[in-house]
Length: 379
Ligand SMILES: Nc1ncnc2c1ncn2[C@@H]1O[C@H](COP(=O)(O)OP(=O)(O)OP(=O)(O)O)[C@@H](O)[C@H]1O
Ligand SMILES: [Mg+2]
Picture 1 (cartoon, rainbow, N blue to C red):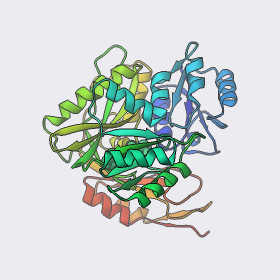
Picture 2: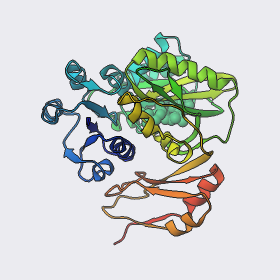
Picture 3: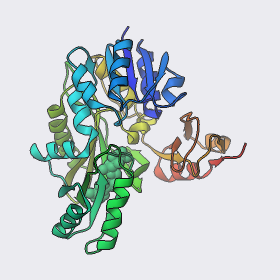
Picture 4: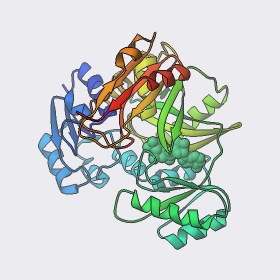
């Protein structure tokens, strides 16, 4: 029986824990707060600061896991690089380290020849403004260390005042202590996708059917699968995902994000772990992205990935901060044919925090189902 130390215990961690436990694993779920979603279904839990090197090192030592499985980006990756000689980091310490900061993975993608948006880095306001002037196009400014669209903003060409605000917004919302932003050409894409890509020890890399998704303010709200066709571009995205994941190495599922503009497939970013837009696979596939990650990291065979039905999902986000919230409308949602709600079990709310999701046969129905859910914050 394998002992798994899960670093990050949100909704993705919860589903991964369920998949791992079905395969007989013991899971120790870790996060910075108590009663996080994965902790509610794991064998044991631990609360500590995973960015703190000494704490992370000591806890890995004391748990002595067979596999360390990062589920979030905010982890001290140097510790993972240091301990990899003695134990397995999923998918590899290098992959986790390179993807923690946007700049490193972006540079690597460009080095191995994947098409990306034009980009540059800035470590102070002056550098950022001069990059903006040189690029002379609409840009997206993002902190190199952040997720879920935090600190991200868009600036049209020739608007110095907004460009300055973008710098301050990025720096105020970044993780880490050294200011650094990526200034990226804005891609007016037709749509964007996640390609869930599974690297296996003794078998070829396999892919899930592509997920198309919609983000609002850089944060994922809707994804769909099986409801559209990409034609030959799907194989092109697969080839690019294979190149990138082979370069990173290790075994497991990766979420590879691309922009599609006309006939162009443009690499955006990558998660070396299940992806939030892939929660939909719980509804659509024989093996969800969590089942696939679990099998790949345990070196179990994946005989086939089957799409059982097409579908769409819509996130349920909190409107305000509260240590309590009640969910209304579940009965109406469940009464809709082939519609399912899923709450994540997060103990409290803050503005825009993702608390749950609805699954439906198509986007329109998912939006209608989401509209039936109301959250109230008074006891
Ligand atoms: N260069 C760009 N051109 C157009 N849109 C962009 C660009 N970069 C980012 N976006 C939009 O912002 C979203 C979030 O960006 P990105 O994935 O880089 O950030 P993130 O904070 O890591 O988000 P997440 O953690 O939710 O994946 C993208 O999915 C896309 O919708
Ligand atoms: Mg993203």
